[in-house]
Image: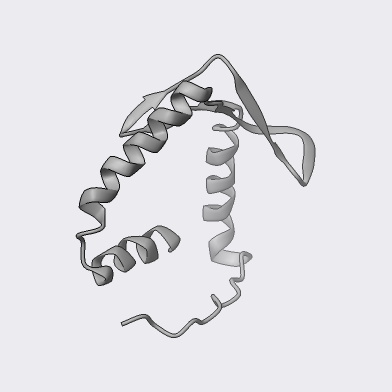
Length: 105
């Protein structure tokens, strides 16, 4: 059963939570600028052509570079998705929903 939608409660990031939040921000800041691969059929593919993902709050800050697919890779992705759909479509809807809710959380 799908739970009723509720907004997350506001968090107070002062006091005890602040050091944990600061540590997490430092850790994530160290990851900025990486190149992220395409994932096609479970295979990670880094291409020469990339596109920068920019932090909208800091337009000079590159969050990461995303590999760009050409026509051949796009076709491979479509074929892989079509192949995966054959088994995914037989998974009960409740199980598929659990996967999506887990990803969303």
